[in-house]
Amino acid sequence: MNSWIKILFSFFFSFSLYANCDFAPHVSKVYSLSGAVTVALKDMGLLKNSKVKGVSIFHPITSQDFAGKILPGGIFLAQGSTNEFHGGIVFYDQSRELTKVLGSLNSVQAIEFASRNLTPGQVTDKVIKTLEPFLKSCEKELASWKKRTTDLEDKILKKIHEPLNVLFYMGEFRNGRPPETLIVNDGVVKWLIEQKKIKTYPSPLAYVNWSAKVMSELPKDILKVAVKDSGNKMTKLAKKVNGGVNLVYPGVLIPGVTQLEAVDFWLSSLF
Image 1 (cartoon, rainbow, N blue to C red):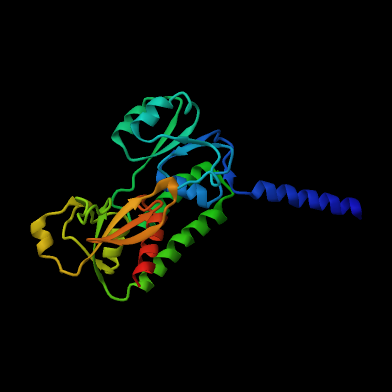
Image 2: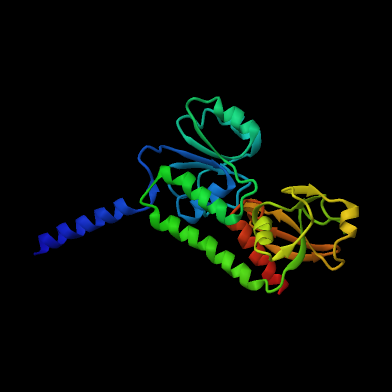
C-alpha cells in the first residue's frame, strides 16, 4: 500500500510540475523591451523564470520582481545588445528604428508590439495573442490576467456617475504651466471617451499639442491632469498643484492594465 501511495504521489507531483505556466520548450531566452509585455509577464509570474534574461529600465519592475538584467532603453539598447540577443526572442514596442536594427539580425526573433489607438482591453487581448505561441500550460494565468483588466474597467465605470470634463497631459505641471501635449484618442483616454465617461479636447488625433484658442472654448472648470510614468521607481501620487493635478504612477504611459490602475488611483483621490 505504501509503495502505491508513493507512486501516486510521484505521478501527481510530476503532473503538477508539468502543468505549471512556463515558456514553451522551443523558447531559450526572452528579452522584453515592450512595457505591455513586461507587465503581463510580471503579473503571470513569468519574470522570475530563468528564460527571461532582460527587461527595459523604463518598465515598472523592481528587483523583487525581476533579478535579471535591466537594459537601457531606446535605439541604443538594440545597438549595444545585439550579441546578447543572439538566439533569443525580443519583444519591443512599435519603433521604426528598432525594427530596422532588430530586423537585420538573423539570429534574433524580433516581435514588434504595436498598441497605438488601442484601448486597454484591446491591448490585453493583443498581448495574450502575442504571447500564447511562446507559452505552455498558461491558460489559467492568461484568463486571470484578462479578468484583472475587465475588473478594473468595471471598477472605473462604476466610479464615474456623470461624464467628467477632463484634459490629460503628458508630463507634469511646472510653475502652473501645463505640458504641451495632450492625450486625446489613445489608450485609457480613448476608452473613457468611447464609454461616454469623459469629454476632452476636441481632436481626432491620438496626441495633440493644445491650442490656446481651443482651450478658451472649453469649460472653465475642466479638470486638468498631467501624467508622468514613474517607471521602476514605483512612485504613486496624485498631487494638486497650481493649474491642476500631477498624477505620477508606474506604467501610466504603458498601454493596458497599468493605465487602468493609474486612472483608478486618480479617481480614488478625486471622489
